[in-house]
Structures are given as structure tokens and as C-alpha cells.
Length: 311
Ligand code: UDP
Ligand code: MG
Picture 1: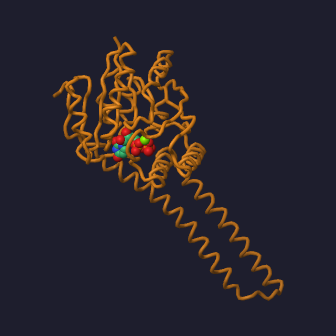
Picture 2: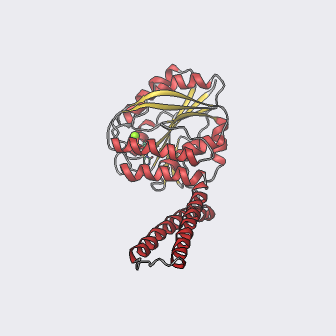
Picture 3: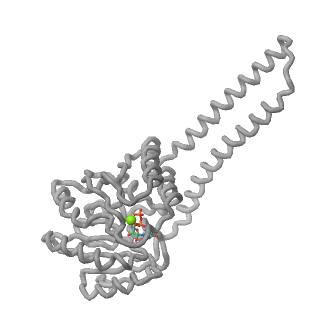
């Protein structure tokens, strides 16, 4: 019998836990697989932990509690690393990703795929700003990036054990899961669905900054082309300024009287300082990443686990 692992990064989801487990179990009994449900908990300030622990009388429901809030990507990676199934489902705790879809996704997996990701055809309950940012973000990332990162795809997906093992072997700290899954490769396909509203509670992300941070993560983490682009732009502008200078000189030689030109000077100085600062900022962003990776800190630290064999 094959086994399916459900990995759920969780942070302050007390209103959703019971409902989520109920809906998952309904789906999982329809699939004739052995299963485990792994909650990876960023220490929460509400009753999430107690609620999960209540369910752990069922040995198939497992808990990994991290030592502090390491964030959704790190929590997800921890779950993948500790799962023992032949297929691994990654799903949010807030029921925005309908568990019922797992059945169809699993069917697709059985047609010989290693990754089936759920593609949103609509996003209920998300602000206009968030939609715009993510639409634009994906276009930009894919324009620059070396691996294709499908738009409108969240982390809701099934991956095979093989992909899980390869993902776990990557040690990047600023893990952009969607990008990493694309990077790992193998046969991947999508399944379309309608993304629901969050069942209860509020999003754990600052709408604007959160999406921006994820986008930047994808961009910086997967390509160094922006650096090349900055140099190219810088070069073009320098060339332009050289020719402007040349025209001034020629004009002078031909005997034209030039005005004092203070505004021009100011304009140019500010303009080029701007470009230099952008380039510097971008460089800094990459250097920061190098610094982070070089430190080689673990992606997460585990406080305790429940219902894993090693207990
Ligand atoms: N989450 C987490 N740690 C965090 C933030 C979020 O484990 O620091 C979990 C959260 O409990 C949920 C999933 O990640 O299961 C997605 O979070 P959320 O629904 O807030 O994100 P959104 O759907 O708004 O992008
Ligand atoms: Mg959500």
C-alpha cells in the first residue's frame, strides 16, 4: 500500500484546525492509501498547538514544533524532510486550498508525474492590490529567471518522494519553494482550481510588503540577470552623457555662447546618483544573500515532535 503525507505549515490557525482535519480525513478515507498529516507549527500565540495535540491520539496526526517562528517556507521544508509518504501534499491550514482537490491531483500523479501543482483560476477574498502585485511579480520573475515559475500557483501541490528528497538536499535559507520545485525539475503538470477565501482568521502576511518580499525572493534567488541589466543601463546612460558633453564642446568650438547650465548639471548629478544607488542596492541584495548562505545556519530548529518514530 502506498502512503501519502500531508504537510501543513501552521501559524495561529486555531479556528481552522478542527475543520481542516475533518475535511482532510474525509478526503483521505476515499483514497485507499496509508496517510500521515504533519503539522509544522511556528509557535503560535493562540490555541493552535493544544488543538493539534488533542488530535495526536491518532498516531497518523503528527506535530513538528519549531523553536521560533521560522516562517512558512522553512516550516514547509521541515515537513517535507520529515515526511515518509510516497507522495507529499503541501497545503495551507486556512482551507484556502480545498482538500477535496487532492483526489484529482493524485490521479494526475498516477499518470507518471512527479509534481502536480494547483493553479488558481480565481482568487476570492484577495485584494486588488495583491492580485496586481502577484500578476506583475510573476511576469517580471519569469522574464529574468532561468527556471520557469508558473504564475497563479501557490504552494498547494503534490510532489513525489523523489522530488521531496531532492528538495530537502537544497540548503538555501531564503527558500522560495515554488522556485525550488521548478528548479528540481522532473515531470510537472498543473490542475486548475478556484481558490477560496480564508476560512477563518486573518492572513499572516502584510499584504503589500509580504507579496513584495516573496517576489524579490523569487527574483534574487533565481537569477543574477538584474545585475547585468543594471550595468547595461548604466553603460547606456554614460554613453548618452558622453555625447551630450561632446556636443557642448563642439558648440563651444563653433562659437556658440552656452548658458550657465546649472539646472542641467543638477539634473544630471541627481539622475546618475539615482542609477548608481539602484545598482548599489541591487548589489547589496545579492551580497546579503551570499552572507546569509555563507553563514550556513540551519533553515529551522525543531523544539519538539509528536508521533514520529524517533519519539
Ligand atoms: N504560515 C506559517 N508561518 C508564518 C506565516 C504563515 O506557517 O509565518 C502558514 C499559515 O498558517 C498558513 C500558510 O502558512 O497555513 C499560508 O499563510 P496565509 O494564509 O497567511 O498566507 P496567504 O494565503 O494570505 O498568502
Ligand atoms: Mg491563506
